[in-house]
Length: 132
Image (cartoon, rainbow, N blue to C red; front, side, top):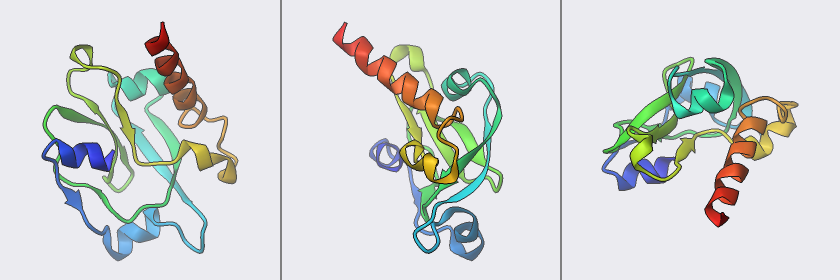
């Protein structure tokens, strides 16, 4: 997500600072968990089917200024941008950039929640659709 945003002329927050790192940065090798607000009407909302959930977190950087052609689809409780997608998805191929790690959500017993399972299922669907 951060790389795509930067490529599209977006900007980064290089460090979330003491307060932000307490919420987002992994500690002693363990991911943290925090609440997530999902924008209704977004692709992410379509995938998750809800506007409020919990995700894991292990970062100290974040998206600042949004890159060209992107829109925010989710933010953490503290306002940190946690998901980006195309502003006009019908005009582009599939893209969903997320800040959390669905592949590690099992460590917090969250592997069957929509931010892990529904995203995994959608990515598989999109990859298989390319082969069709």
